Image 1 (spheres, rainbow, N blue to C red):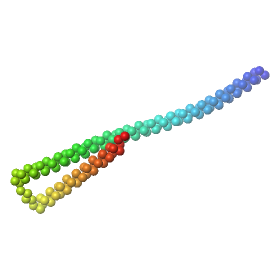
Image 2 (cartoon, helix red, strand yellow):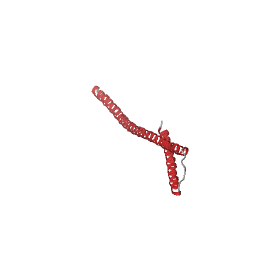
Image 3 (cartoon, rainbow, N blue to C red):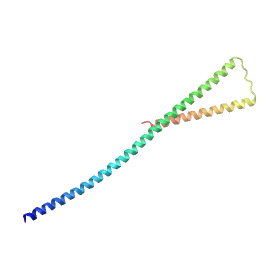
Image 4 (cartoon, helix red, strand yellow):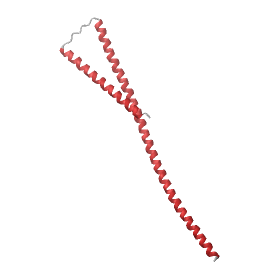
Length: 134
């Protein structure tokens, strides 16, 4: 009898322990799955951050290039205007034929178009840069 009571107590303890072990195993599996999901989310976040930083650097570079191009275009236009003014001071006469005038007008239209495109690119790059900035 004494042994039977001890045996039954041991069986109850064993069943209780096995139940707790089962619950802990389930908890561990859940914690592992949660950790794996968190690590995957962190990797994805890191990748997105890396891409955003690369895009920001690229847009900053494009903006600097567009600004340099705009400055160069402006400098060329100013130099041409100064040259024309100096030629007029020296007494140069403006006698152009219809063909020359057409060529000049076409060139001026191209310069205006390039200036407009440069301005648009600059604005787009500034917008991108502002959108990417934290």
